[in-house]
Length: 364
Picture (spheres, rainbow, N blue to C red):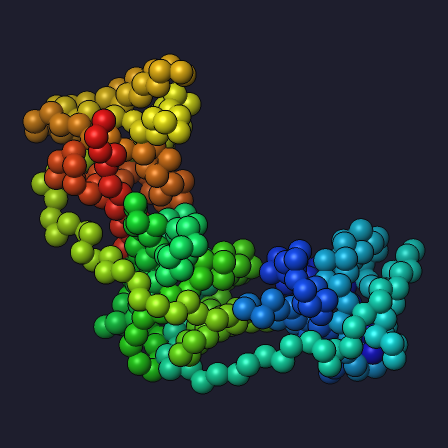
């Protein structure tokens, strides 16, 4: 194999591929990137056996062929090289010669025959949506995924396709984030899946902001096709909890707040909370909102904001970190608090189709 490729293009491509490579794999081949050259195209691929990412870029291919080399070390070489073009040449022992105008290195490789073969699968449904929309969906809900490995289904994102609506949900049992949008291009049967949050984070990291993404869903696998990059992954098996039952059917109170002003108050309030007192008190009274926090070993704080509210005074205790998470990612100037009392679920709505539910802190 021998080819010439632009350094910037191969660097960008490798950066998409290397993050799934772990540091504790017992199979040396899983540390490597598969490199294949043919028909003036350079194809590269990595896998950890659960996730597989492949991408391809243009190259001047003098001799077709393939090899595998340590992916992260290969990327480090390429990033630190000078000049615009890189020449790659492999030999019969699978080593890869890497040359630029001023540098020359050789990386020892492993036979491409040892690289795991991808599993093909028939899709039972296919969705096509703008890539920027999928980026936004994941951005709006990923923070609510559980990090507790004792309930695997909560380590993932619930994705449902029904009645031409795409619903994505994440919950850790204490709060829930949801976004629901209509879809125009859909093939196959309706149904639900659970996508591991690690996969969603990879998609969120590499997905371009222009063009469409094709999502092909099988019984136990899923494929995302994003331009020249393809990601496939196993799905989480199990039953996602009935999230609809924790969403109140109606709210008696709805109060609009400016996102930036309220979020700034919260960020200051967090400085006077602690692990033993991880909450702030929100007091809603006619025309004003008072936010307070008091921690014995740190101190106390108070913020007052003008609001449009004319009902009876009531208060609610909330975790300020949970309260801040959706505000960090919502692309709105104003959002609405919805609630019934200080003990029932609190709702935040802002971006179209987005809903966030969190439980108040009790027994304070």
